[in-house]
Length: 232
Image 1 (spheres, one colour):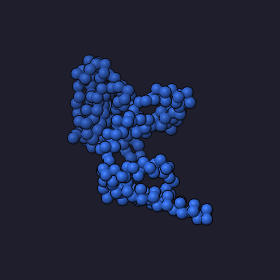
Image 2 (image 1 turned 180 degrees about the vertical axis):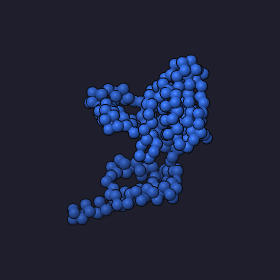
Image 3 (image 1 turned 135 degrees about the vertical axis):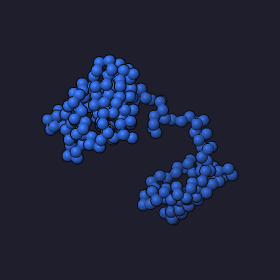
Image 4 (image 1 turned 30 degrees about the horizontal axis):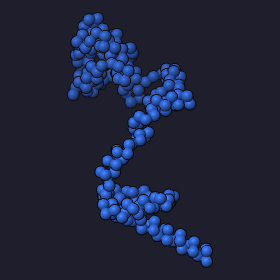
């Protein structure tokens, strides 16, 4: 790993690019990556030139090994005046490294990006656009949503997971997440009958199923007692 200032020269045109890095080998590997819309290059101007003339037309060399990167890079930029360096001046930030845009430039950039997707921030979609996206993606597999498994898939997954015990750690996490929460669901008569039929099957007599059946039985018994009390 070399720390210093480097130069990339186009042997066909003589144009140059001056850069600095605390890991020059890694930086040269980044410059060699093919330029495309999804690859945010360090210097798009240089990357487009490499795509145009091919990587073989460029010569890479280390000008100086130094830890004083900003000042020494500025020295070599002033010396060569490289065409691929769109900024001929390296202005320091308060920490002593990097480029600081002027307030006027920052305002222009901000104004130019208003309403455009920017680093994960997305422009609100119109109702018509959302409807088109919904129609185009119906029936397609989406990450964690929108996918409806077939009966055969559900049966295969159920067979794999049926009766599989949860580890004490998982059970403790589930229990902790439910503390203080009120159970709002109630099984329908059809659901209770299904649970009871499943629990009667020797293959499905797990501790969890039996616990659910006991709870539902007690709930139905209490409801019956209340109804008799009210009727009496």
